[in-house]
Length: 167
Length: 80
Figure 1: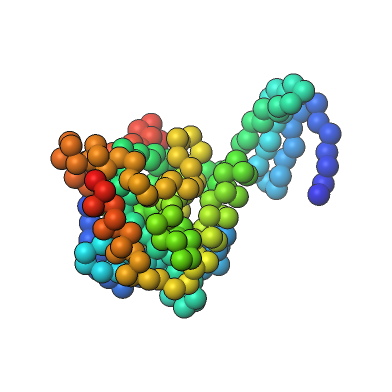
Figure 2 (figure 1 turned 135 degrees about the vertical axis):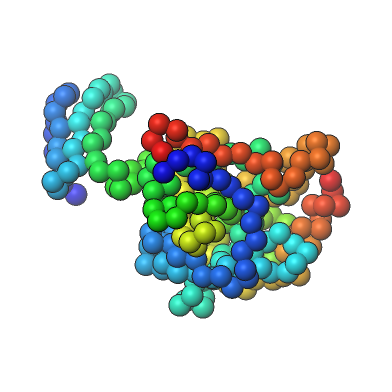
């Protein structure tokens, strides 16, 4: 597999698309299939709903819309699991924790991002150990939106690195 | 829990293909060398636990309130 076959895209996934997570999400190892739904066209949040567990759902967002410097590294094994059969266009989403009744206190889990291959709809939750991120980054107030605005950055200005020696 | 005592440089083997060696130690830290197949994920437990707990917390609120999320988003945009 070559590096150029792996890139992040600012992709749209059809609302309702099924995504397989062969390892499940941390804490939910037995639930391996979800559907990704848009919530509303005017907000950048999505829901990840377990296909066979109507009670289990997560709110996700594109981290780069808020955390414009966000940066993750995929290792060889992550790439292999996501792109074994197909070269990958990858999408990153992070899980929001929204305290009931206090949505303004929502936080984003930047340490355990979900990476989805939008070519084969395989997903994986990463565990970032060598990273500056933690599991509870406040969305409110936005830490980097000022910079986002002033530099005219778009969601495509995100970065990714792949361990070159191992890919 | 199985408890084993090992000396510096000694190791334990788990199954047929995982080997953990004591590389260095002092009074408060132990350095481990781990040899395992690449498809075995190895995590620092506290980070793994933190993400697991956060996932469970994130999944706890089963009602997804689009209006509240819209308010959250607009509040941000307004503040910028």
